[in-house]
View 1 (cartoon, rainbow, N blue to C red):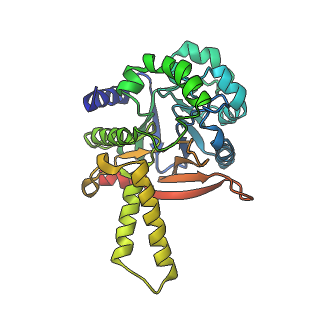
View 2: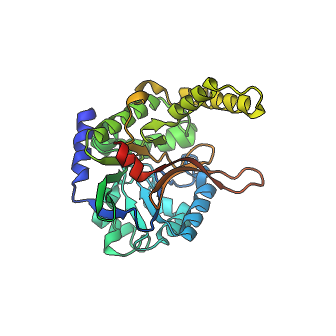
View 3: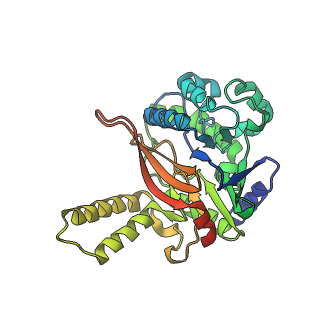
Length: 349
């Protein structure tokens, strides 16, 4: 299984029956928040979401009050390692807060770690009363937005989890699930305490997957792909490391030794870039000088420091945001990392 399998699965999802078709008119008021890869667990040592609970809760309250539509982009519950009853016993309040957005303001996408929600009878059995009951608010594989400005069609934006066509997460899911639940979780994570959210051996694989997703999107006409799955934010086809490297180069080209903040900003970015080179090697990143803004990734809601990332869409603007975990007396707070015009991205395709 390689890029051809992933590309074929993405093409199928784009036109699939399990893809919900929506219209996004940039001339009409709209607010969306897209959050991915919570992996809510059972509250034990293997539950990597637990450290992000307070941050995620604060973000949900903010977006509910602000009138956003909530899009949950897959791997919402960690159902390869846990039963839904275990997850809901630990995180029932958050599941109810998500559902409180209500019909018309709630879209749930299934991923590989919660792919049981691709089966209608499983949704009816476990999520009845835990998700809005409008018939259009059932769990889907993807959202397909027809993006327009009034009567002018700008293009298509497809929003999905991103595991489609992968060998371990899709094709071999039947084998991976029992291994995680009955061997890795009780022995590796809970007994030995290993495998908890750290720079992992598959960082290069995540980079390669992002590149494969970008290549598929770049081969389509007037299309933007937004995904999760890799747990690594990507903005307009550039990773955070690539953005840092561009900022470093810009600061070095325009030295301002008389400004005390110039050197501090340069050193901060150098340290951040060095850390990210270790965590997510750049060998599979897209080539920076030829990129088209056709691929975005939300990141995840289970970073080890308690932070979460997501993508907002508000009145024609896209924003990559980070919600920072509470520190000492400071409650969770929102930071804007990137911002751009959705119409402008379509123009640049």
